[in-house]
Image (cartoon, helix red, strand yellow):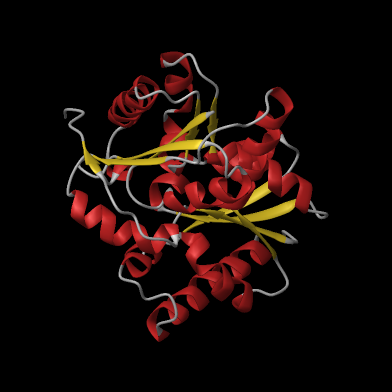
Length: 264
C-alpha cells in the first residue's frame, strides 16, 4: 500500500508522522508544494488547479490512497481532486469534523485555523452537517511562530493565550457551551501541549492524529497493509529548506528530498 500525502508546505508532515505511527508497514510519498505557497492568498480556481496537479503527481508516482493534509486545499479543492484522480481521497477537514462529533457532548465546538480556512467556513459547514455548532477563529500569527521554532517561546505562549481567551469570550457572547477545540491547521499539533495548558477544560482534537486513525480504519477494513515502510519526499522549491524545516515537523531526520516542477 502506497499512501500519498499532500500539503502546500511542511505542515502536512505532522499528518505523515501520525500515519507512520498508525500504519508503519505502508509506503509513503509526500509532496510539499512549496513553490506555490501560501495557498490561502490564491483564488479557489487557482488552489484547485495547484491541488489537482499535486494529486496527479502523487498518483503518477504510485500512490493508491491520497491524504490531503492541507486544510486550505481540503476546504476549497477536495471535490476537484476527487474528480481528477481514481484513488480514494481523504481530507483533514472531514476527519476533524468526524472527531469533533465523537468528542463533543454539548454539540458546540471551537475551531482555530488560518485566515483562508476560516474564511471558507469549511469546518462550520462540516460540523453543521454532523449536527454541531462550530465557532471558528483565525490565528494567523501561529504558523510563522511554529516555523521559527518558537514552540515554548514566551511570545508564542502569550499569542496563544490572547487568541484562545478571545475565542472563549466570543463563544460565550454567541451563547455557546463548547467542550471541544479542533486544531484546524497542520502546524498547530506542534503547539498541542501549550494549547491544552491554556484551555484545560476543552478536549483538543489533533487533526493529524485523527486523520491517521481514520485512514487506518478505512484501509484496514479493505486490505492487509503490507510494505517496506519506504518514504519518499518531494518539494516544488528549495529542497534544502524543506529538509531542514521538515525534520522539525516530522520529528525525525529527512535525508533526501526530490525537487519537482509542477508549473505555475
